[in-house]
Amino acid sequence: MERPVILWFKRDLRVQDHPALHHAARLGPIIPLYIVEPDLWAEPDASGRQYAFVRDCLESLREDLAGLGLELVLRVGDAVAVLEDLRARHKVAHLVSHEETGNLWSYARDRRVAAWARGQGVRWHERPQSGVVRRLGNRDVWQGARDGFMRTPVLGPPEGARGLVLATDDLPSDESLGLSDFCPLRQKGGRGAALRALESFLTTRGERYQRAMSSPLDGARACSRISPHLAFGTLSLREAVQAGAAAPGGRGPDWARAMRSFQARLAWRDHFMQKLEDEPEIERRCLHPAYEGLRPRDADAARLAAWSRGETGLPFVDACMRSLLATGWLNFRMRSMLMAVASYHLWLDWRSTGPVLARAFTDYEPGIHWPQVQMQSGTTGMNTIRIYNPVKQGLDQDPTGEFTRRWLPELHGVPDAYLQRPWDWPEADRLLGRGYPAPIVDPVAAARAAREAVWACRRAHRGDERTAQIVRRHASRKRPRRARPKAVSAQLSLDL
Ligand SMILES: Cc1cc2nc3c(=O)[nH]c(=O)nc-3n(C[C@H](O)[C@H](O)[C@H](O)COP(=O)(O)OP(=O)(O)OC[C@H]3O[C@@H](n4cnc5c(N)ncnc54)[C@H](O)[C@@H]3O)c2cc1C
Image 1 (tube, rainbow, N blue to C red):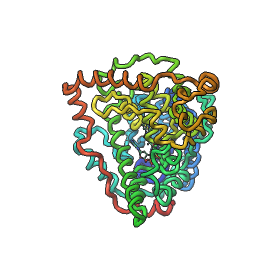
Image 2 (tube, rainbow, N blue to C red):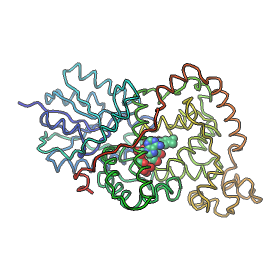
Image 3 (cartoon, rainbow, N blue to C red):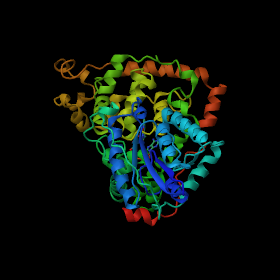
Image 4 (cartoon, rainbow, N blue to C red):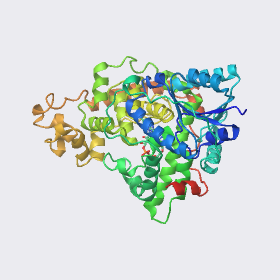
């Protein structure tokens, strides 16, 4: 009798362009498994909005698998216990999955799974699904490897896959996982939503990408919005890269610039994820150890709470945070500013604020998130220190005040000239401390103090061996280039 193969779906909830599914189909009859791991969802970076997105994705995955004659098996519990139960009952010989560059929790879990597989004589086949290279010895060869992967053909769903039909658990409720979250405007998950986002971006919305990506009002439409789909794998990165390369040209310089910029960002994704793949501990410790003691490890509770709720008294910061809490998304510049204000003006350690943002992002992707959080906090010892002025950002990015007033209705009556600094408004007494808080810090003085402290640390360590080591290891000698893939496969075009 042929022994079954477990295909373990992780952050790859699709059947298209799924190298692991193809591999499993060649090995034998498949048990297509998704494990809801309560301990994963109890981690401080997990949230109800992410779980709701995953639920959408599982529904669509179930339908797509049914189209291939396979039935999704859902199990709730510890991964090793679930895998062992299936092995013992069904004499499983192979476990197949994609390599995962996840958080430290999933890294530790994968090590336990690897030990279990070795101990039970189960062969675990892990396949890459992006440009991240496992056990990369030399960063100089990374770009070529990444581009090479992106040029390989997008895979359609496997043909002739056979599966086992097994009992399946119900999806646990949010409450039973301890998740409570209210995100009324979050993006919907599932393959259909992923393809609609990509297609509308590559045919129409992308036109204003370059010009509007940093606008808090227009960015939500001008950006691709594929991030949660890439994070949970309803779309593969290779599909996005190849579809972008095949998008019809001849639409003027704006369009060409937009598509170049989109490809560059897709390359940045792999570039950052490779950092976490190489050094998973950067989720918990500063990339440069000299910055460990820079800020107090115990966060100032009042500042942390005010920032997390969008109640700092700095209008543009609060509007961005409240928008993020309600929608689960924010553009890159606004994410950077939120993080920088927390780390510099409020002088909060990134380990207390990073999880707050992670939970708020439907698209939370550890491999992008933690390197970005550290970069925007100045703890890498090598990147440019960017201390955004939140008043200036508000004036530049929201000149009419429409975005700020939308999320802070209590500032409705404040004249434009004072909207981003209501404390200077002659009638501020009517507002501050009543409908809206007084600023939690003086933004100018706080930025100055932070700049001095961070630069003092940087000067003290400039040129030392540890700094040189970090630069050698993490700074790409060239900016990551976009891949030049062949035309997109017919599969993706048909799906669209
Ligand atoms: C502090 C901070 C935390 C962040 N955390 C996350 C996160 O958890 N998950 C996440 O997907 N992105 C994160 N980003 C990067 C970026 O803000 C988002 O990828 C982007 O806003 C998602 O929207 P989009 O899909 O419309 O992006 P687009 O601009 O349309 O870009 C397309 C894709 O390229 C990738 N990308 C874009 N910008 C970057 C970047 N700067 N670095 C790496 N990859 C990029 C993403 O996968 C994105 O979906 C973070 C940025 C900062 C400053």
